[in-house]
Image (cartoon, rainbow, N blue to C red; front, side, top):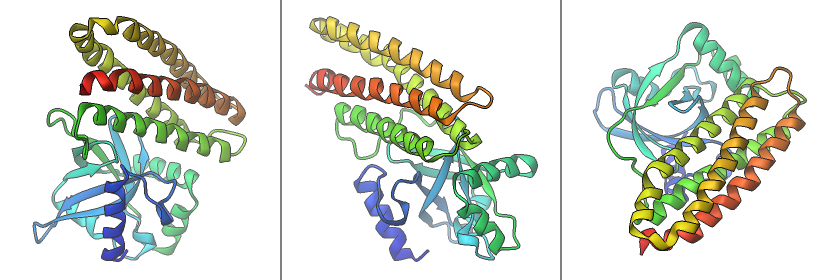
Length: 278
């Protein structure tokens, strides 16, 4: 991919919190920054990714089916610590190349989402690598571009809104059964929403309650909404892990969760951002 095209995508990605148009529109994209194997120079590349649970994401070194691995893959072999920008968070990660059956299962999941991956593999004699990027704990989360606590909250919420929108589109476009990667996508979303709400329950909400006693009724309602959403998350997880579940059943649960979650996020922002930014 030409460097000028890459740079255009990078700038659009950073300006729009991870959303881009063109060939990447509607896809999951991250910015991967690696250290040059020979030069030591930092290089940033837009790369499609697959959710893989709450602790890591997967990227595929397809290079469009070219005969050689992409430069970023050679870089992370030499220097496995990389920087990831996912549109919400910027974080350090450890890159691990998957091997054997683990690689094959992950690549098969990718093919389920798009037969383009299979076409890339068919074009080349090399086995296209699958790389896991696992977050390294380096301190408080870095929400790039956010200039206030309210902006941080909105950026995180927007990431949830976008992910559930992507999942709904994937379920609606799927066949009669639920593919393995789509199951992972749903479960990863559930883990992420749950972790965010736990962090709010244990951190932000008690802080607001202490500083703004007048917000007691608002916080009580938000707590009740967290409980409702937790029940919907449990139900979605139960449905997607069931054998031979129908796509229509999953879509109904995703719609229920989306309606409740989006209403909750809108209400929380309207009520809390004036307090935490004031």
